[in-house]
Image (cartoon, rainbow, N blue to C red; front, side, top):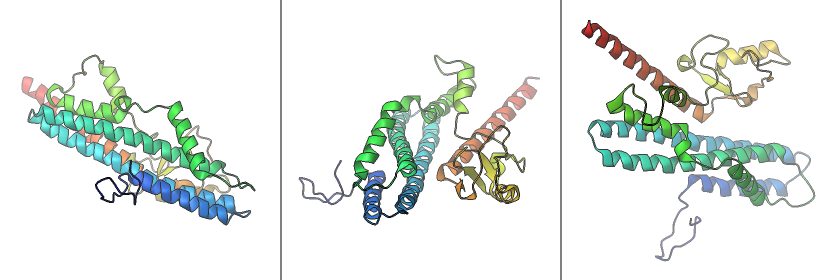
Length: 281
């Protein structure tokens, strides 16, 4: 990988190819500036800087996820036209995107962890080493296996279903398909306050702590009403909600759209099956 501003052997200046690493260098520079101005409130500044980059990186993760969905849609069309070679190329592209997706997810987790655990000290802090060590630790604990990612499974299933709708893929049972095709980060399918399905929410937001989803207006009113300790309205969830940590993170909208697409596909498949039964009769 060539850093921004470096020159290749051909004499051509190359800009860093990964947005993630551009943000990484900016983030480290910002942390060092905050460290130089460190005071009793230094920890707050570092936390703010970390939160800003975490949000920025989440946007990149959401874009990668959108790209994978686009690949899936194109692959389905190609499969219908029996262009198997092109589908295979897209599948390889999805695996590469998923590897980057996992790297970005670990990077976000490392940023979040550092922002929450950092404490000012008299000794200079090597933020680059701290962040890289945290990423390495996360990578060792959870190695990237793109082929096991549910998003890859969904891609394969969509392509397989073009000519084998309703049939399990080779070596798998029907139950396995149901489990993997419904995997995502959406923990509740209904807003606990309005009772609306998540896919119908006008302004969906998610708690950064417990990951439950709500209609924004309803949850903010709930928090104001239940002060000083508004517990998450999902039954059994003990989290105390904070308005500042109830957000519409970039991935949420992508996940809801994926759920909506899955729901529409299932409804269409059911309708086709019903008409088939009628024809048979």
